[in-house]
Image (cartoon, rainbow, N blue to C red; front, side, top):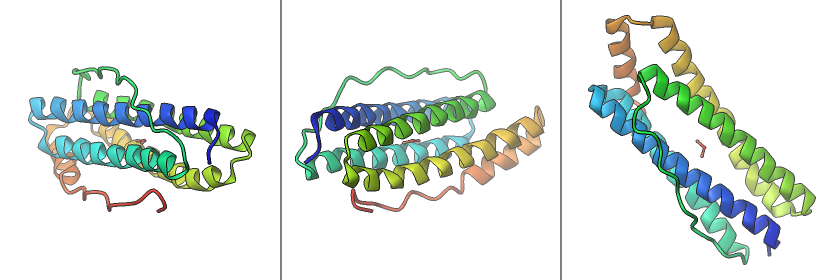
Length: 171
Ligand code: FEO
């Protein structure tokens, strides 16, 4: 059974993961508008990742006797200025989510909630991967600048991103 404080903190994280999904769907639509189908695909897969994050938290609350709450989701931006701008916004957002997960872990330690500490390890590892993935793309986009042919090559590489493997709340 999780405490009310822990429940409230996880419900707030569910909302952030939903917003992340919204944000990546908006980025996907932005790339579609620019005709960058590989980037569009990459962000669409990222949307799928965020839905998995949200679902894991949602299921976890209910499996531990808590009440999952769906809070209001903010509207994401529709214009990111450029492809690089979209990935930089993604990088900034992932750093924010990492801080939020770390704070969630702090709450679980303060609440002496060992089960939630173990559960959150998956998210800690996931955030390292998420930040590394987007950093690599931002670095490459900065390197190529206005080189259209190189941009097309990156777009083609991003089109090959595979969908996430299905996971459960216990995975
Ligand atoms: Fe759910 Fe991209 O963090």
